Length: 154
Image (cartoon, rainbow, N blue to C red; front, side, top):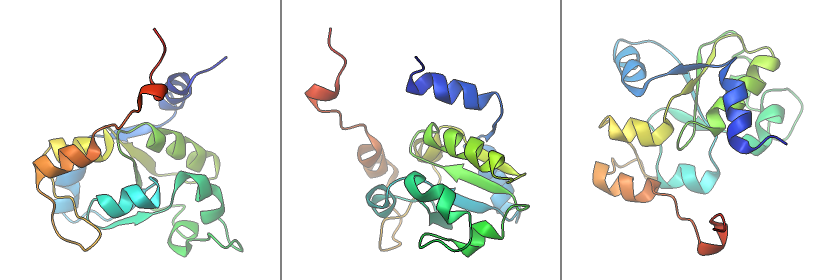
């Protein structure tokens, strides 16, 4: 039986990752990416990287194709564009990048360490109103919130 981390590790054999500092440098130099945040809408509304679009992982495949309620034309037309997939910590984005490659997206990468790594590198994050969120406040918002029943029994 494969576990979540096994699935991520397997996908990493096929998916390119980009470091936050490399992405920041390339964006500053004017490189054009589709920045695809695959977190849930409530996560995206709480904290996001500037210039990102939100397509939750659960509707990704439909968002990449025509004729669905979830169709995102920018993605459908972006199969040959450079795409960076983003999540909170860099795991969901690896799985999404792997699926997108299977769907014919030829230039897709995952942001290594996700929004957390972006914040750790002191890059700007925005709240739902578009205001910049202080790095320490962002750290708090990005912390895992495990309930006791979600922890592995000892």
